[in-house]
Image (cartoon, rainbow over all chains, first blue to last red; front, side, top):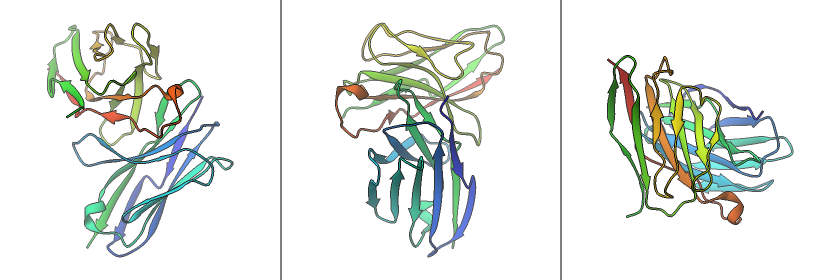
Length: 110
Length: 117
């Protein structure tokens, strides 16, 4: 059964600093997603990563995928307060289920 | 604009009562999903459906039922067998993954908050 883990679960960082969120998954998958959720709101898609070595960037966020290591990273560059949210990675199984990680709650402090 | 509509936004359930959460999409997506989110937790898959008249159990299907009679609609019934139904319920849809290599994410509705009276 596919398990998805995220590290760390809680992250408090100062504005202007860099940090990386890690997403590990337990079985082979050909698709990994990153989502953002603001408090009390639904999920917003950030990135879809399809292949080994894929890298995507949007603003201060950059996501990468290593399918051999079953690892994805979400790198935050020069954090700003607006990035405070919960970030989820999700992985598609061979049976088309999409399983989510527990989420990383990010708080950016001025 | 295309999107996913969930209703109601807030729902209260009495003891022993079944309640149904609505999810409608006009994105022409084949696949639809129901997730449950507890406070401070991630999303757990309840049921999903890849095509009309077919659906599969997710990781926490007990106490829930679904139907998929139309492509646009995937209602979720929370039965009285679900003893702890208080949660935020999210519906999502996507293209059917095997229909191509498009890198499309799931689209989510705004959610329904269910509480016990």
